[in-house]
Image 1 (cartoon, rainbow, N blue to C red):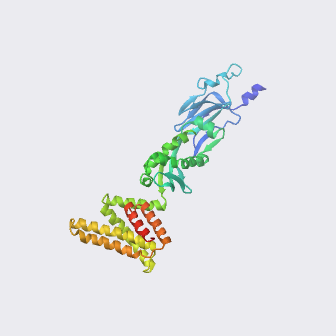
Image 2: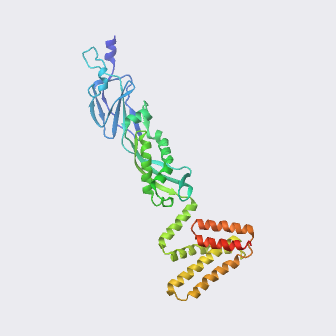
Image 3: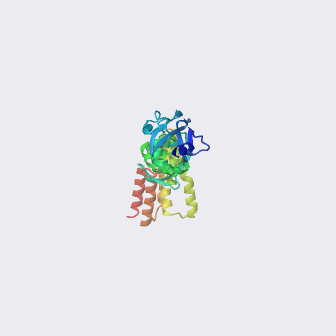
Amino acid sequence: MALMDFIKKQFIDIIQWTEDSDGTLAWRFPMADMEIQYGASLTVRESQMAVFVNEGKVADVFGPGMYKLTTQTIPVLTYLKNWDKLFESPFKSEVYFFSTRQQVDQKWGTPQPITVRDKDFGAVRLRAFGNYAFKLVDPKLFHTEVSGTRASYTVAEIDGQLRGLVLQNISVAIASSGIPFLDLAANQILFAEALRKQLDPEFAKLGLKVEQLTVQSLSLPEELQKILDQKIGMGMVGNDMAKFMQYQTAQAIPKMAEGAAGAGGGGSVVGDAMGLGAGVAMGQVLAQSLQAGLGGMNQPAMSSVAASAGMAGAAAASGIKPDEVMATLEKLAELKSKGILTEEEFATKKAELLKKLV
């Protein structure tokens, strides 16, 4: 009876996997009640690897090629008994195939702005997104740590975990890249490479490897974007401070006009104080421009232009109340922190305003 049961069994003599769709990382060869014939052929194609599991333990890992399954190719099976001591025995084991080709165009991004630390600006919130490609490089580790004995395991099932690893390591990658925060948007390739290197050991714990990673967009907060725009403007004029002051004045003139129109001729103390700073800066620009154009001639006339601009601003700032003075100082301090006013200009305006309190 036992002999008849054995003869009725189906034996597998060809084991292979022809991937019929994308996105599958691991696939178990269907065994049902069948057993692998001794000497069966195992075919592993390019971009695949196979793991042979016997009695719950990984017996061997096979790369691309064709193999005859015997106790010589799988030494761990040498303890199996021969059937009736006349023929090599078939064996009941499992074979798992793994796709090692690149899984491309995997999306990552920040659903909400994330907070990162920058040495110049402290805590900053940013948004970024891009894509990456990865592949499976250690099927044994992936089998024991991730996919297990499941019939199949897909990219979609591990996608959330991988995207979480990307987001978790963004701030560390920014710190290790050494790229100034304001330069990140202009150095996306360097940032992407720093992030990929940061992710390598995290993916390796799962038997995976990041092949490529791109940063397609990186959005800075509005305040820092304005500073970046100013920095770009400075780059356009180079290190010529006279040209930079002209650039700053040109940026300030429309805002001064809007403030004057909105005040209906009366104006606020904050607007007047800002006008004071802009007036002094404009006087300096005019003086420097005239000096450059006339070769240093007629300096008294240029000084009078700057003095007139400063006096006009000071006259507009008369009658300041204590609380208005404090509000004005806070606004001027903000302009200084953004690089619009120099330390010397801020100190001058501060001294002038504090005199109004005496």
